[in-house]
Amino acid sequence: MKILQFFIFSLLLLTYKLNSQQYFSRYFDFEGDNDIAWNIIQVGNRFVVFSANYCHQNTVSCTGLLCFDKNLNLIWRIQLDSVGPLNEESITADDQFIYLCVTPDYNPNYVMRLYKIDLNGNLIQLKELGPYSKRISPTVLNHHNGLLYMNVLYWHDRNIKGFDSTEVWYMNKNFEVVYKFTDTDKKFYEDLTGYLPTVDGNFLASKTYYNKNGVIRGHVRKFDSNGRNIQNFYLPWTHEGKYGLGLEPIKPTKDNGCVGLWHQEIEVLFNDTFPMQPIVYKMDSLGNIQWHHIFYSKHPKRIKNLMEAKNGDIILIGDSENAGKANPYKCGGWVVRFSPNGKIIWEKSYNDTISLNGYSHFYDGLEMENGELVFCGNIIPKLEGGQITNSDDWLVHTDRNGCILPGCDSFQLLTNLEIPIENSFYNVHFNNPVTNELLLEAEFPSTSSIISISDLNANVVYTQKVSGFPIKIDLRNVSSGIYYLTIRDSNINFIKTFKFLKL
Image (cartoon, rainbow, N blue to C red):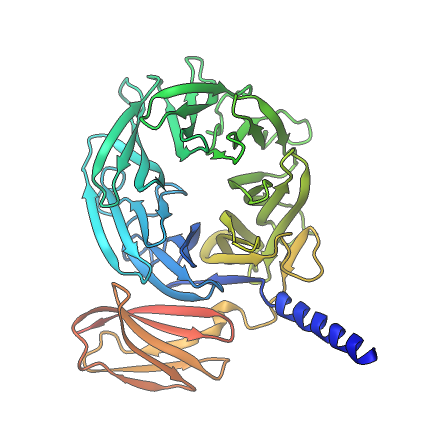
């Protein structure tokens, strides 16, 4: 009996240790620039993060894709020459391909680029559209029943009388427009956000607009499969638009209703410098608001995204600020989980000791097949003279209760006792440009690293595991062009990338 008890205890202890190793706070820095992870999506058994400021902003604007395996280990990454994502949901995927929309650096907001990329990071198709006579913004890219759906918002010139309008494009997966329709109420400012399928085969979007008195109002708009507006559900809240807030994206729910966000100005006596708080609401299929929750807070809370979990819970994702010398973590990732009937199950904020100045943010998240959660955003490890000098892509993996650490409380701080990331790859030198041979010298705290060289299309031309430096790399058989030199230290799950020219 004692042997059986010991076996059960050992098994439980091993299971606990295995489970405790699954959850993490992980960060990625590329060229020391202000990387920001806007979106995370699942593609088959992989996860893809859409990153802004992927390369150094002093050279060219660009975005990037980071692809992770099912265990959230980085397996490839590519660069796209463009300004940052126009909106936080301009990427979608099926089981085979990733589809995304950006605007190029040479003519931002008047030209669009549509990309189709396979699961190995290979560019399958690129289609450029424009230039357009009006400033445009593709707000949401989504796919359903073999088609891609994208809102294209046309902004009118603020110095000329006119109004905004939105076109919704139905495209096949080769980016050929097969149908489109225009949605407009002929307002000075209006914004149709989202175009997402419902359980009953229709589509939902949120609508924000100014009325003639400058008051912002909003409603949920339902369309049939042909884009005909069949229902409008008006929200009871308004605000004067002083801070440019209002209606945010909505997400259809399994009961044929939806959950959505509204950012409203609220007069609060104890805080007259930030009189606005986010509201989350649940609406049924008839447009009745079943419940809503207002986040009254002395310090700002921002909800960037929301989703319905597999069990019907509602999960909000964003960031929450603190203040005062007693709290060194001034802004952290913030997640709230509601039950289907609107009761808060748990609320947690997150930070990492890498954030030496106390700032981090969440922008998106998803629920994995096993119910665990992944959130993405950015963490800011360095601040000089009040100016942000660097931010890193940030990925946080938790259990279904939002816990990283075994002792799970409302503030999840991952204490990293290792050398700060900016010193992990200290004093790296190599010759640039390269003619025949690259000489790499570096000082590393770890004993082994993986060196790889890839072209701009993420094709690897050289890889080697090394135990020390300096090393010499023969590149005589490599074609001329621009390449990325990547140094990976597996001990701290971090990759450092440099760019060089091969003559």
